[in-house]
Image (cartoon, rainbow over all chains, first blue to last red; front, side, top):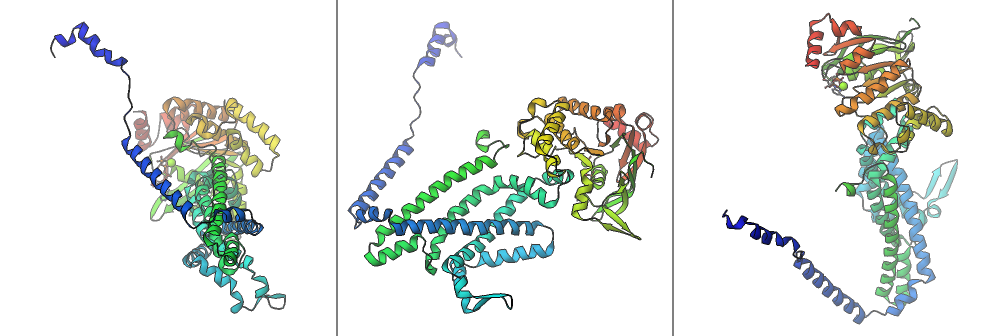
Length: 290
Length: 256
Ligand SMILES: Nc1ncnc2c1ncn2[C@@H]1O[C@H](COP(=O)(O)OP(=O)(O)OP(=O)(O)O)[C@@H](O)[C@H]1O
Ligand SMILES: [Mg+2]
């Protein structure tokens, strides 16, 4: 280093730099990407506006009673099938980790069977159960004709709920496994019975792990209920089809149905966030520590 | 069995696969006394504690707490294992404090203490809360009642864990290295609470490496090695004038 550079005046000049304006680096990639996306979006919007879509049909049918009734049926089916799925999921997961080999094998068999066959196929089997079992019940006690019981609603609820239970049981099981062994021991030490320990200590902690995937499954179920249109259950897609068979505005009615699916899924996502926050109490959030 | 013996263990033996973790371990703790168990890592100290409150099932031997045979019912010449429910009932009378605290993370400090009294003993919520707050005040955490465990230091968490054990009004509290997971400056706040508890007449079995605590607070000290009791006796004798060379060596090593 030469002496000239360290002389007071040059040092002052050097530190002058501290007063210059700071210019953030340019994210050229982002600008370009945003530009491309905007162009594609514009092309898409243009395509839909000049395409053979009669938007008036979309707005006319958006709140049509048949569509709204279909929406309600979709929601009812989602709740019913998911309720069955969650109850079965919890029971089967507890059976699986119970340490009782018989229960554990029943759980594994259930998972294998109902996760293995396509949901649509299962719906059709439930719906057509009358072909192999004309009557259901306990002979001598009570009995009814299968076709009377196995309505589209019941068949869809059983078919969707029971196959959902297989998936949900794996979510519940991973939740249970995520709880530290020390928690089980602490609960036992204060004298809790097995059931009380699961209900009060283990499941509330497992919920934190389970809520995001279960939320995912609820959203999946909203859309899966559309399969029930195949067995004549009047959910929203089925009702949209009924209308377009009559007026031939196929795409318009499919857009109406899409709109409602998106609305329902958006509302559910918000609810999921709330639930996650509730079960996250007592734990430091990942976001805060990142 | 005499009335003043609270814990009596005879020939407790336990293997994990082929490995004998406990080999005919015996112990006797009088009501109101503090018994310390010391010994090298892997000597079976935790396993023995866990046999007392039935977290671990022993292969042979018998343990009585408060004159009640733990885990089994005698029927003629057989001992029948108790049901889940009966085992839970026996465990209520025995508190346990763990090395890693094991507080319930989804419950606040006061809820941790109330959980057992409400859910297990069936106490009304208002009474349980009042008693839990009093216990937290006693361990010096009156102002932390509504904090979650994740918001407390290790020493504070362990004191909540002690309050949780006390909340069940047990006959006996087991401590498994209660200060081993703590930063050095937090050890004394937990030991002070334990000292206080001992002075109040609580019967305690404490697995610890804190020989100072053992010397000042314990009535008896038991030295274990390789699943066996090597030496047991009054604290002052075992710690200052051990009979066994192995005990002396261990104590020297801990002090070093
Ligand atoms: N669940 C288990 N399965 C297999 N081996 C085990 C199990 N629990 C304990 N052991 C073994 O039994 C022996 C005694 O373990 P224990 O935890 O009782 O020792 P300890 O004296 O408490 O040691 P430390 O001071 O390290 O806590 C150890 O060798 C350990 O590896
Ligand atoms: Mg140990």
